[in-house]
Image 1 (cartoon, rainbow, N blue to C red):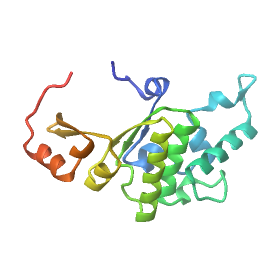
Image 2 (spheres, one colour; image 1 turned 45 degrees about the vertical axis):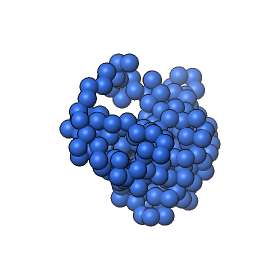
Image 3 (cartoon, one colour; image 1 turned 60 degrees about the vertical axis):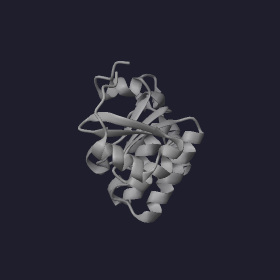
Image 4 (cartoon, helix red, strand yellow; image 1 turned 180 degrees about the vertical axis):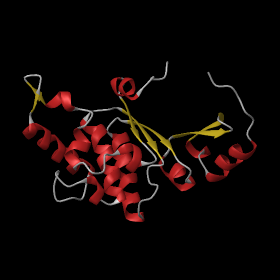
Amino acid sequence: PVPPKNPSEALARGIGLLPESRKEQGLITAFPIMQNISINNYGKYRRLGVFLDLAAERRHTVNAMQEVRVKAPGPDVPCDTLSGGNQQKVVIARWLNHHTPILIFDEPTRGIDVGAKAEIYQLMRKLTEDGYSIIMISSELPEITGLSDRVCVFRSGAIVATLEGDAITSEEIMKHATTGKLRYVA
């Protein structure tokens, strides 16, 4: 497969990104929750080619907020007033609202509290049960070993091992990350 050339092409292929830096790359923090969830999906809410169906946008936003359990008084709340965990959930809700089947989670729990981490983990499990594919990039071994079905270990920018099932342990990951032989993967 040829990698997408830009975000629009990735979106057209059904790929969504939850970036490591949600504030700089994942959200427009001054915008309300509703606009952050709808921003890549305005075509869904157009009427007569120009006008937005704000009632439909609000309805879909509220449903998405409920699905990922965003804790906020409503969809008009600016994202910069939300906790880190709730900001992360807003980015996830955006991709669910767009029905994006492949999600790339880059350091999904960086900078959020322990309770929010547990909620994000629970949400990730539910998404995979619902048929979403998640590619997780993480530097936290417990996160990797606790959530992954398959782990590709990288060293110097190349895959050195692919682990599955009982082979997914912190020890195996570290062994390959530090001593694994570089191999070419087509």
